[in-house]
Image 1 (cartoon, rainbow, N blue to C red):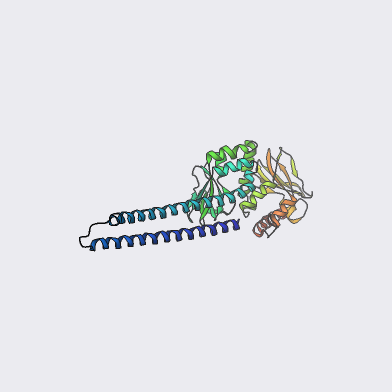
Image 2: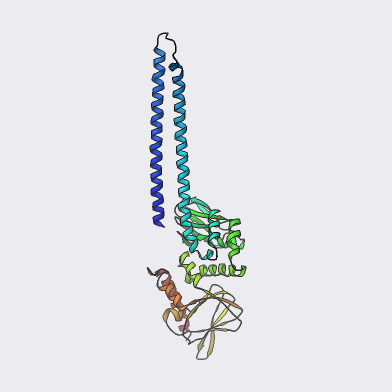
Length: 368
C-alpha cells in the first residue's frame, strides 16, 4: 500500500512538471507574439504618409488572434492535466480501497460485485489536520474508511471531560454502528494529520451493506460484540484492526439460568465475555461456597487459568439468561502474546491482561 502511494506521488509530480513546462512555453509564445505586435505597430506608425498595405491591416489582427489562441491553449492544457491528475488520484485510491474492503470483517459477506458497487458510489474526502470529521451526538449519515493519515476518537462522558479512546489509521473504519442502529454518533472523530477517507452515504450503506448481514439479530450481535470489546478494560489497548481480528475468532454462546459455565478446579480452555445477562462467581471456601462477584455486560472471566496456566480458580454460574462471547485458549494466547501477524509483541495488551488478571487473583487469594 505504501508502494502504491509512492507511485501515485511520483506520477503526480511528473504530471505537475509537464504542466509547468507547457505553461512556460505558452507564456513564452505569448510574450513573443506580443513583442512582434508591438514592433509591427511601431513600424506602421513611423511611416510617412505611406498607404496601408494588406500586411499592415492584417498583422495586428493576426497577432491578437494568435495571442488569444495561445492563452486558450494554455488554459485548456492546464485543465486537461488537472483533470488527469484527479482521475489518476481517484484510480489509485480506488485500488487501495478495494484491497482494504476485501479484508474488512464488516463486509466479509459482500459479493465481489457488491463491493464494486459500493466503491463506485463512494466518494473520496480530504480532511485537513485538526478538522472534525464527525461530532458526538450528531445524526449519522455516512460511513468512513481511512485511506491515508490518522485520526483521534474522543468521547465525552456525563460530568467528565472529553477523553481519547482510540486512534485510527490506514484501514480503520468508523461510523457503522450509528448507521446500523439509526442513532447518533457515540464519539467525535478529528483528523490528527491530513486525512484521505473513503466516504459512503447512508442510502448506499443501507442498500448494499446492511442487507448482507444474515439477519438483523446477527448484525446486532456483531455490533454489540464490538461495543462490548471496546468498553472492556481488558481490550482497551487493542487497535481497531486487532479488535476486528478478535471478532472473527469469537463464538457466541447462550446459557440458561442456573447453568454452570466453568467449575473450580477444572482445566481452563476458554475465555468468556458477557454480552447480556449476568453471572455469579463462586469460590469454594472452608465454610462452603461464597459468591465473590456478580458480572454483567462488558465483564469477563476465565482469563486466570489461561494466562497463568492453572486450573479454574472459581465456579461461574448464570443467574439469568445470558449471552457470552467465547475465545479459545489458543486464540487468547496468540492475542496476548503476539500480534495477529506474529511480528512483534503486543506489550500494551499483554501488560493490561496481566495487571487485571493479577488483581483478580489477589482478590480471590484474599478470601482464603
